[in-house]
Amino acid sequence: MKFKQSIAVFIAVFFGLVTLIALLFNVSGLSTMILGWASFLAAIALIFGVLNLLSVHLNRLFRERNGYSGVLVLGMLAVFGAAVFDGLSGSDNVSLLFNWVQAPLEAALASLLAVFLLLAGVQLLKRQRTRWAFLFGLTAVVMLLSQALLASRLLPTTLRQPLNQVVEFVQTVMVTSGMRGLLIGVALGTLLLSLRLLLGVERPYNK
Image 1 (cartoon, helix red, strand yellow):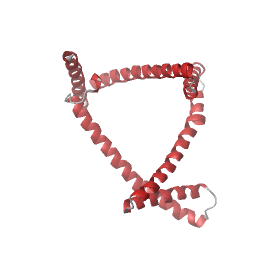
Image 2 (cartoon, helix red, strand yellow):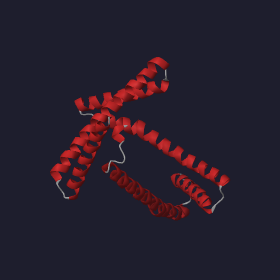
Image 3 (tube, rainbow, N blue to C red):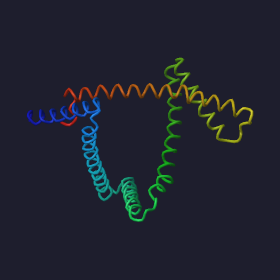
Image 4 (tube, one colour):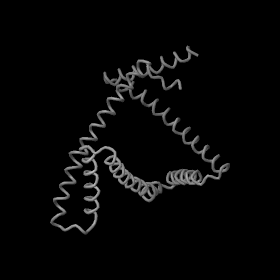
């Protein structure tokens, strides 16, 4: 068992170091070949994952009469059928499904997320009345009200321009700064995890 684990660690570390050296010293052919292998394996894993998901929900549908599983199976089959039909006829039914189904659902979930964040801010103010909690709640209320007023025609024209400038300032300065901080944190975490994988400390391929 330990010998098999050592082989897996050796293969992972070897290909990780080869890919890193190829990217650092601009050996484009080698890095492209290894990344192509990785993309192929990821595509195969994705196919098996989709088939496993379909199998699990088909079992739930026929054994437990689960309606949500039925909706998921119908959605998967509809998208797959639309993709096959598009490939044969040259039409664009997948984009139609995306624009009329997925995009509205994403917009609805984003709206619910904004409301949940506002409720979380209210709960935070109840538990911890600090200046950061007040700042979070004030920013959330101002942004929600400003977006609602800008989308409607109730706001006078004289107030629309200053409010639009405030919203643009918050989005370009505060939100962008927070997003960049999060991305820097994600990049540092990815770098640390990559080093742990190269050194054989983390072994997700043995689980």
